[in-house]
Each structure stands twice: as structure tokens, then as C-alpha cells.
Image (cartoon, rainbow, N blue to C red; front, side):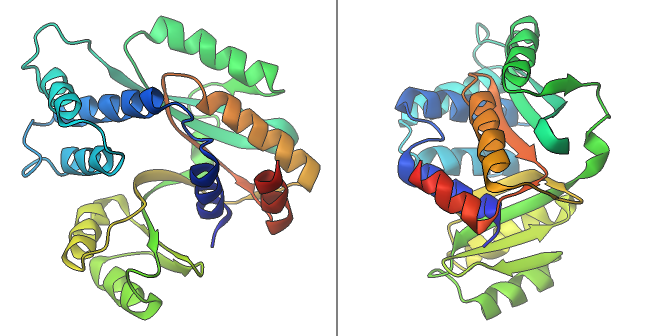
Length: 250
């Protein structure tokens, strides 16, 4: 299993990703609202369907989901207008980060992000300074109990995947962005419910740090993730098994 997938599993077990239930619902609602801009019907808007499915998996109330759709689709004329913003930055020891945010106030988000970087020993970068180190990919992760590796590999290859990774308890599929819907539909037909699915920024080349430096870096990632406007943090640090053990024990 890749370091990313293992770390995501550890966060879910420890409740680190979103310790407060309200924080989970806020992020999901923003994701739904952004997706609903392309249409308020989940049956015809694939991105919205995924966002709604993710919200349901977190037991988000139906009223909250419907309200978020109305805000995004424009039915709620008094709804807050959100925009997607991506920040690039550097962490310690040559590490690089891409941070996606959904915000209703860019003037609040920018200084918050800059402060989070600087207090963790990193710094913000100009647009494009870091982005070239990453490729945008469709990503799926699901329990291997739902589908064998051989079947997942066959499904992925037939649907246009670049790579299918066997991590023991978890299987991961990476694919070109344009193959996202095809793979998601194939998994749905196979009755597979991914723990994670979406578009990710995948590092072209990973940086290896020692355990102490990795722990310091992941603390920086957690600091950034705690900001209200942050949706996802992607980075180029390879998390070793030793570092994962230390993170889980922390």
C-alpha cells in the first residue's frame, strides 16, 4: 500500500482528518456546492453524484445535502458564492505541496495559508513554481475485500487505468483524468464502494526524508489541513514504513 493510502487509513482510525463532525460536513457541503455549479441533478452531473455519495457515506443529513446543492446550482439566491483556489508551496528539505481550497473569501484564505506555511518552516510559492512537479490523476482506493487484485487489475486496464496497486488490505487505481467516470462506473457496476475517489495531484518524483524530518513535515501538512477552507493537501514526500509506524504511535 502506498504511503498516502496508509496515512489516510491511520487518520480515519485516529479521527485526525476532521476531528469535529461539523468540520466534515462543512467541507462536504462546499464540495457539493462547487460540483452543483455544473447542474443540480446527480444523475446527469457525475461530479455531483460522487460528492453526494461521499456525503452520504459520512452520514451527512439529507437536508444539508439538498441545501448545498441549491446553493451551488443557484436555486438559493442568498447562498454564499464559493470559488476553488489552489496554492503551491515548499516545505522543509526540498518538499513540495499543492493545496486545494474552497473559499467564500480569498482575502481571508491567502494570509491564513501563508501563515500556516511559514509557522511550519515552509513558504508559499508563485503559481506554477511547484505545479510542474505533479501530474493530475484520477484516483480510487477501496478495500481488497470488495474485489480481488486480479479482477481490479482487469477492470482498471479495461477502463483505461495507468496503474493498479496491491496494498494488501487496500487496492488503489490511478488513471488519466479523462478515465475517471469510466472507472467509477465500472467500480459501481462491480458493487465496489471506494473509501476514496477523486482527482489527485500525484508527484512525478518523491522526496525521501528520514523519520524525524518526515514527522516534522507531516505536522506541517496537518497544520494546513486544519484550516477551514482547505479541501486537500498533496505533496511529494515518500512516507516510509518506519515513519508511518511513528505517526500511528504519536
